[in-house]
Image 1 (cartoon, helix red, strand yellow):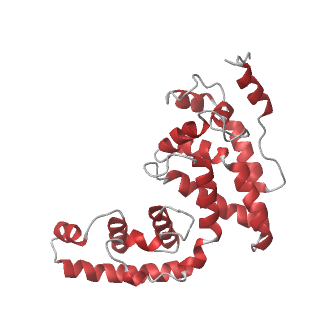
Image 2 (spheres, one colour):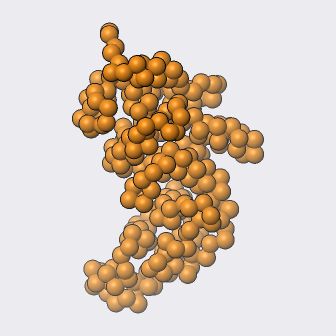
Image 3 (cartoon, rainbow, N blue to C red):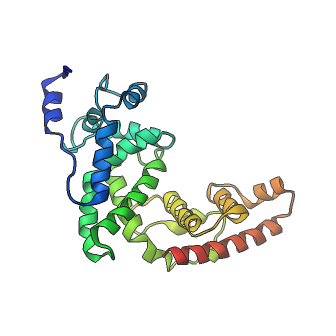
Length: 259
């Protein structure tokens, strides 16, 4: 197989691309998985249909390089390239997987640091980080945070994996109103409140919340008003308030279990 680089710069980048290594089982699994898909014809056909900047893709490693993997953050157009991937990640699992690989080294570094104070050590910390990172990648607020994508994802992941639960204990969710998002502004970290709320609901689902209460809270958190819900259900607003109170009580119980 003959590889051709459009410019000497790209050839240099390709030769210096390295992936994480180590004894952690999950890290090895991710790197092995990446090796399998990075030159997989089906994956390459899919990525090339996206018409990403820079032309034809011969390996998914090239996508990582163009999005700033392993090079200075000032690399021209890297942030915009990564943003294009994140835009797709909401509805495209392959795009999300590429973004995860792009931020994998700093995620491993966080797990190494947090593993010293986490029950289960590095492996437990890294497992928690991956779960949070995947959700954040798939729900990234592209309309609000179009720049510094990698740093936003890495910072948010550490926050949600290791900081947020201590804040959940202080939440008074029984006072939720239609502007519920405002209760979830994360101190001075500029964490998107919609994402934090989505993750709280995600935790509640993992601990058994489902059905009508969950659907009601999801609708209210997405911006629907009590009046709109009542009109669609054919009931009075007072009835919807009662439903909301019961749903919030259940959410509080589930999030306390999650914390």
